[in-house]
Length: 393
Ligand SMILES: *Cc1c(COP(=O)(O)O)cnc(C)c1O
Image 1 (cartoon, rainbow, N blue to C red):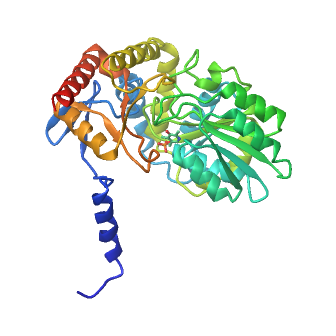
Image 2: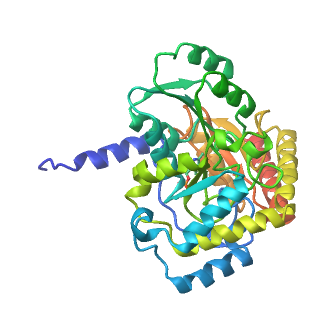
Image 3: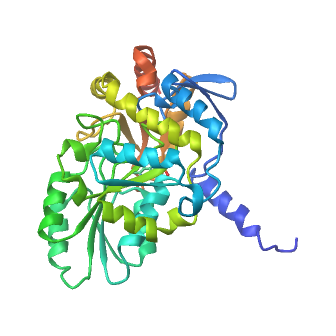
């Protein structure tokens, strides 16, 4: 055979296969009530991010449907003419929800992180990133050309020493997830806030998984930590607890003005679709008016963690909230367990490298209000049965 310029693709895919690291695209049919269908089989979906069940909440659907009268697409980037009345209303809503001066929308949370970091720092600057930060934060920091310093997970003492050595940089930025998406633990926001203040550093906090879930009114972990919201660059997404799609930054008016003028992922990408904006707007109202959703979620998550530990599954001690990692170790074993659970009617993501560090593959359960007591019972029964089968082998 004559070698071709694309031969390397199949070679690379084979290499992934050999390491059991190849991912395959599945077709998932969503069914409301916390379920989905794959290959004709109905499953409880414990691998989504729709924590409050708002993606299919009647009020949210009705809002998105009626907004469709204004059209589907935004028709342009926000900068040109794509910031419609729907976008402006959602920005005001987000600022009020997060108690900041202003907000700015982005096409996705990934784009918000990527564009914001690159807008705020450059080659004369330094960015400090938690080792387990989301890929969009790490990639944004790399793309910015700032010096990238990775600190051990949640280790603010280490960060303190690094900050002491960083006086020669023009600007400094500390970047962290607030609720870590693969680990279910939280950043030490109070300490990071104090470090940022004392070293005159910016603090960017990604509340993707925390918005709607934590905080007295669902405003996230920054709300819980009572940070001065205009002293922080807070990033979020509409695509998790808000059940829609899109990203945003909330903070001071001058920050949002600067991002409007400089963040290329916002400037050169089409605005959010109109039903997305309307759906997210309605979702915020539901979050504020139905606190019982997040109360149920947090209470139930605690119960699930306790039950799993009683069955001798390895749930790390610092885990809180609806993301529950069950540590397995090998990628191979994780995949097998995930398949056994699927046979039991439970869809739980097996998370493997490079999403997580090597030898830390895990099952990642995410709880949603939509599961109800019935879904939770099914989940726990399946983990129990898989545990017993394992012992029998
Ligand atoms: C999901 C996620 C994002 C990206 O948000 P999208 O809107 O899905 O692009 C960013 N940061 C974290 C921590 C996330 O979990």
